[in-house]
Length: 244
Image (cartoon, rainbow, N blue to C red; front, side, top):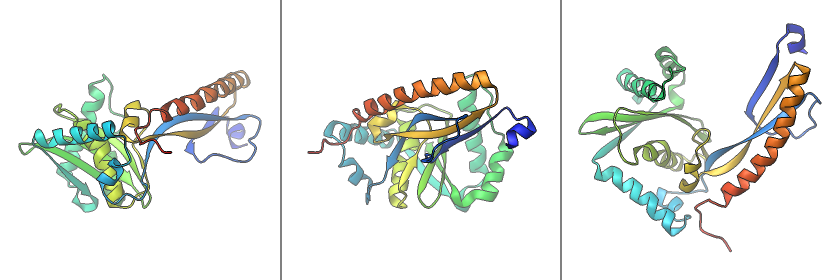
């Protein structure tokens, strides 16, 4: 009613809980797949590894060992441990991630300064260094139950560093802080082999234009079938031990 009155062309509710009740006829439901990690009461990282098939477990250990062998150090900073200098380095790598792909960064430095001022108790910054030079970092947000990520960037390329900063240290943080779910961002089938499970997400949309509305709604119905099939295909690739 508000959109009709104000001549607003559409509204969109993204990544919310599934609506169980009947939807209005002109509201359509869209599904996509994200990959989430679930903390099944692990006490240490090895508890999680013990749930994986042998080959997958060995591969993760090999990737993590390569970080040590490359003499890379990491530090996890949260709350008031994040300094202005740390934030400046993060923003440098954040910009580089976009510029490498020929794009301009979506968010400016002032935005992240405001986050640090207002949400420091919910921010986790992981910085990697080599021979005392900072080389990469990843920025996460968290609450009492979940870890959300992540912005990532680097000034130099090192083998497996992305996996360590974006996934493995995030998993460890969840275990150490008793967080139940780690949502590392959209897309990325490489997450499956690292224990992230395919989860169906829910979004809801309303389009004012009658012809466009019907076309998009039909597309979403067809897409939904493919998403359910894709979810099952991804589940078959999960690295966990086979259960009887």
